[in-house]
Amino acid sequence: MAIDIKAALSKPANAAKFTGAFIAAYMSPAFGTRSKTEIDLLVFASLIEAGAIDPEAPEYDIARALNITPTRVRNLILNWQLRSTSAQGDLRGAIVEALKKTRFSNDGRLLTFGVESPLLKEEITARLKRKGVFSDASFSKELVKLPADAFVEFLDEIVDDETKKQVRLTLVKDKQIPDTSFKALAIGVLVALGKKAAGEAGGALADELLAKPAAEKAASFLRGLLSGDAKGAAKGLAKEDIVGV
Image (cartoon, rainbow, N blue to C red; front, side, top):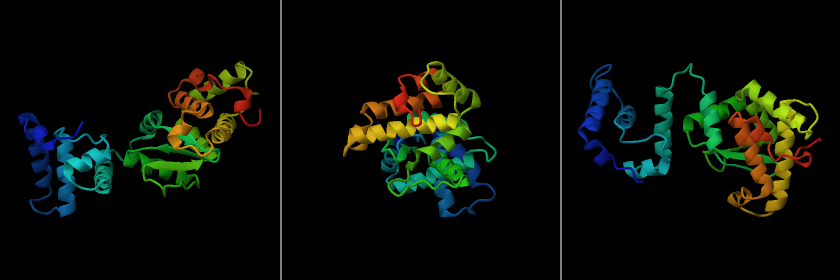
């Protein structure tokens, strides 16, 4: 559904919210002291406050509504997120929720997933850099490409210990794997299924790859892991789906 800013602001309640948010911020610290960039950001934030724009809507839809480029929309959203999110806030929960919704593909070497939120994308990139991992963002600013073992290092940091423990215990109980660490298990699953998916896909496109059995298993494993569903993560995995077993 297209975003209609004029229609949204034609409602008295929304117009009042927009006006109140804009005037309160524009008068602080003093009238006329804000730069054009700051005023643009203020208008954007006020539109969000009034419910005229959903910051989680596709960037292209927002760009069409404002008649600006998607790149400029992305910058506006990032700056709004940075100012509206507490610097001390823990974004791990938001990252996990975003990863639950995204689609993954694996070519046997690199794991690729998309995160549209500029703030979460930057947070993920920063967390990876602190571990010495530099993801490939040359194709799209919304996509993250990195080796499976590096992604598992990242998961190891944001997934709670109980979920990791239950995933391992479930697979050990089903005699799919020997008793081993979460990281070794997850790397083994992603590498093995990635190689299988690459063999199944051949020259297929990413969307076609996701429809292949091995890719479906990998996606199911990650969905269960990120949802805290240990049994769901382990469901359908066999010994041959895990490297080193």
